[in-house]
Image (cartoon, rainbow, N blue to C red):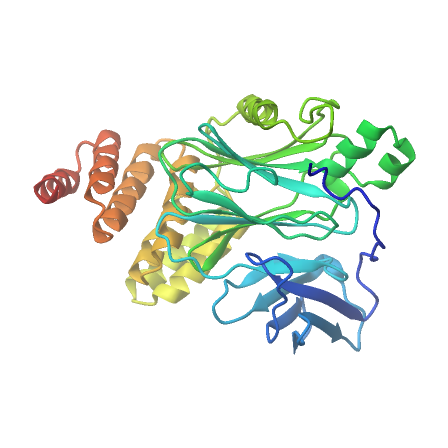
Length: 408
C-alpha cells in the first residue's frame, strides 16, 4: 500500500542570499536525473547578466559582487535538446526541471516544482474517465502519463500528454502533506506545512520545444486544491488558477490513499465553478503598440523579431487574443508547429469584442493548416469547418474545405 512518504526530511532554506544564488537542475521526465552542462543565467534589471553552468551533479551557483534584487531578476536555464526555462526569482535553494523537446504536434508537458515546504504536492490530470496521478501513472489509451512523482519537496512532478483528444482536460495540484497530517491528527505537523500559496510552487507548460505558460498560485492562506487550467473539447486553453478549501476526506479515503473516482469528480466540480466566459477586455495600449511593431517586423520578413514583439505584447497584456493569433502565424512560418498550435488555441479562448469571430476564424484556420500539413486530414477538415462557422464570408475557408475533402 502506497501511503506516500510521510517522514519529514531536512528542509533547505529558500530565498536569495545577498550575493549568491544556488539551484539544482533535473530532467523533467526521468526521476532524479541531474542535468550537467546546462547554462544558467541571472538577468537583473539594469545590471550585467551573470552566467555559469551546472556541474556533474546538476548544481549551479552564481556569485555576484552586488546584492541580487529578487523583484527584478529572471532566471534562464538552457541546454541543447531541452526547452529553455525562464522564471522570475526568488530562485535560491530551488530545484528546476528541464523539459526535453517534444516531437508531438498536439502534445503538452506540465511540470510542477515547489519549495522546501510542504513536503509533498501532487499533480492531477482528469479527462474523460481517466485520472492520471501518483496511483495511476498512465491513462487507458497511453496518451497521457505521469513521468515523475516526487514526495519529498522541490519536485518535479511531470505529466506528459502525447496527443490532445477532443475532450475536456483539467490539471490541478493537491497539497498532500496537509491532508496527510490532518488525517493522522498531527496538527503540529500541519502547522509546519506551508499552504500552496506559500509553497513557492510553479507550474510550467511546454509545447514542442518552448515554454508557453507559467503559473504561480494565487494568494490564499487556506485551501488544499489548486485548479490550474482547463483545456476544452476544442483544444482551447482556459486559465482557472483558483485555490479551493477542500475538507479532509473529500479526496482521500480512510487510509489516506487518494480515492481516484472521488477526487476526479471533485476536481471536475471545482473546475466547473470557475467562470470561463470570455468577457470584453480593453487591451492595454502599450501592448497594441508592441503588437503593431511585431506586425511590421513580420511583413518585413523578420519572423524571429516578430515573435519577440508578440511575446512582449502578451507579457504586457496576457489577454490580448490578436497577439496570440499573430504569434501562432509566426511560429508556423518557422516550422514551430506545436507552439503555433498552442498560440492559436490561446487566441481562440481569449477572443472577445466585435472582432472576436474574425480572430477565432483565423486561428481555427491556422490550426487546420497545421493538421493538413501533418496529413491529419480529418482534423484539418474539422477545424476548417470551425473557421467557416465563425466567418462564412471568407471564401478561403470554402476552398480549404473542398481541398481537404478530396484528400480524405
